[in-house]
Image (cartoon, rainbow, N blue to C red; front, side, top):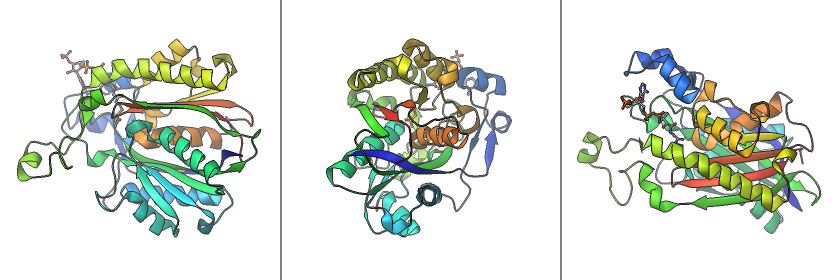
Length: 328
Ligand code: ACO
């Protein structure tokens, strides 16, 4: 038995934040942002919207798309770095909103979160003989981004995307190979310093802005390209396929220059690389399922296509997965 995708759904806030809007807030320009990142606009959650509301909308759409009702879901996993609250986990709110009572947990692997939950969900489905596992990548990075830090506020956006994993035959579509990793010695390159056990929230941490995301952008950039190439290559080796066999590359949407550099080194041309960063920016754990769902909805992915997913993020984590496309 193998786990394959049987349905998908997405949810993004309707509120757009354009580069022109950012020009009015911080010392930046549309030209700089487009040239250095490829981003033109991102979606920002309104009051009343949150990681859980976006996840519920995406999850409900995915369940419907799979032709199921919520009671058919055996396990719910939410990949997020921007949880609804510290306690309880985001899955509690999402499960309640979806009307499911199955087990649920959150998984925080930064922007590699979707690949991590794809691997985890697929493995639990096959190990536990489950019928359907719902995996959701959902983020509201706008809630942890310093609106006045031009090094980060131009990059991040909010959104969610969900996939239902269902049992498929061993020779059918689904997850073929994967690679996960984390170099925790680089944790300080991308972090929210306060608000956790090590440095609880206080008037001082808030005054210092330590509840906001801090990132050493250029260093993360340098490592990201190398990590994506190594991890993607390892995954292809494990599957016993060459890069020429891969029809689609679905990378984490962090920066178009990282995507281009990784694609070049891997030998995957731009026309086989899925990109939507121009419209959503970096939505962390939501970015890979969002770009994948969009491509699937546009009819770009054919049954049998090999799709290579690769993400990296806070940790620094990384994760790659090779999927044979096709609905379970
Ligand atoms: N507008 C105008 N100028 C800017 C801006 C801006 N928004 N931001 C920085 N600059 C300036 C800098 O001050 C610097 O000026 P200087 O040369 O006078 O000192 C110059 O532009 C170059 O700055 P760099 O930071 O070196 O620019 P870089 O080309 O590295 O781009 C960026 C910065 C976009 C942040 C890039 O480093 C990047 O994308 N890094 C990776 C981000 C990432 O992938 N994060 C991981 C995932 S996130 C997660 O897991 C939640």
